[in-house]
Length: 236
Image (cartoon, rainbow, N blue to C red):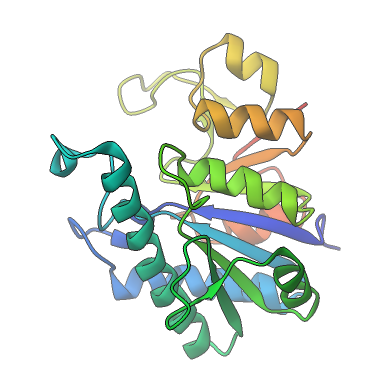
């Protein structure tokens, strides 16, 4: 029995790179889509927010000296490219997906319209939200918190390269311990970087829990959907 009916999955652009230094690794995106498709076929209503860091990031060295708003808009365009790649991978896996963008590029993707997104979810289609919030100075983490709240998701699943939230950086400190559960207030007091501050505050205010897990761990996503102890649950 699934623990959730409607979830929002936050994927970083970097997750699509696999072992490559930039861009989209085909084998990686196919593996991810395979796991996500399995969830969709279980009848789970699934929305995805995708980042763009594998192509361009507004705060990266490549944006040094550039106007921040301009750099952020370039980053939003990168998320649209990733969203289209993701949609095509879903198509090849036999799963219907729709891309909605916070920036209007109607010849390429449809604009974000909340009632339409809700209808797609109810019809069993995966909805991919691109272009962040459509505003500079806001991250795709914030877009995930915002869209998750708007569509009535029961939880935000933040896919990362580590299998949860640790007491310290596990790469630097091998004795760091993973939290199975932690409250929003505890995470703030311990200065644990779960999401950026704006996204984190929005999830806390909306009482929208976050589950941090490793996208590279096979079967992790399904275990979360089935209510098993995987990654770290951040709750009110």
